[in-house]
Image (cartoon, rainbow, N blue to C red; front, side, top):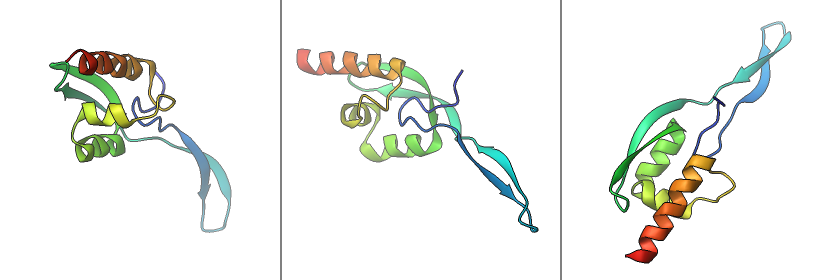
Length: 95
């Protein structure tokens, strides 16, 4: 399983540990990923995703999973989130 947010696309970054003597050794900055179940109002079901804490705050700020997915770019979404977005668009057109 990749260490990548399914909604925002945040992934692992690299950098240096720097000691007081300015010795540098490589390190990894891991995203704060959370397993969450989000409710889709339009689809009427719960969706389980692995997203970053930052993306979770963004989902709540935008007013839910449906609003976030409609505004999100397809390039940042995972394959599973993209399938949910397509189903969401079909449900909105049908309604």
